[in-house]
Length: 194
Image 1 (cartoon, rainbow, N blue to C red):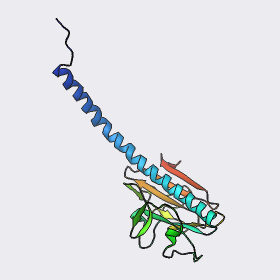
Image 2: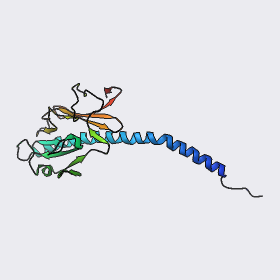
Image 3: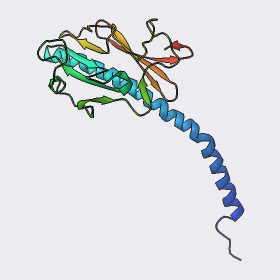
Image 4: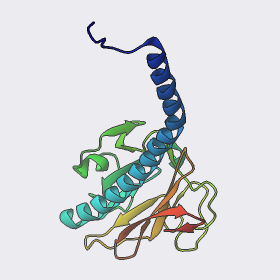
């Protein structure tokens, strides 16, 4: 008699049952990893955008701004843009977004800029103070009372402040800018900023 190759029906059903249990248990944790990755990516993107704005100001020898509530938008729209102050008016004028000569991949309400990743918004749900112990603004963006921050031609920050981001998993990140233009990212963990 020859040997038989293959699996019995019982063995196949047992393997299918075990796989379904592993997938059922593992799927929620995998979803949490994806959500954490999105909010972390959003914080990194904001930090890089702030550094890019600073470098653009130095290279152009003009003030350059990043605006978290451009035009008629608000921070609740989860959109921000970068613009170069070409006429030294210290306020946004039509065409100045394009003058930054940066690859701004997204658009909203006719403006080019950046959208936050899916499930990420400006704000700090469940957190009352930022890394500097100042209170968290309702819209999640505060640069001396404004929703924009600028850098001068030396790269100095015109108004220090913090941008807060929250993911759908409840993770909160803060991206802070110091007076000399240094950008630092924090994560709210174990009831403190790390």
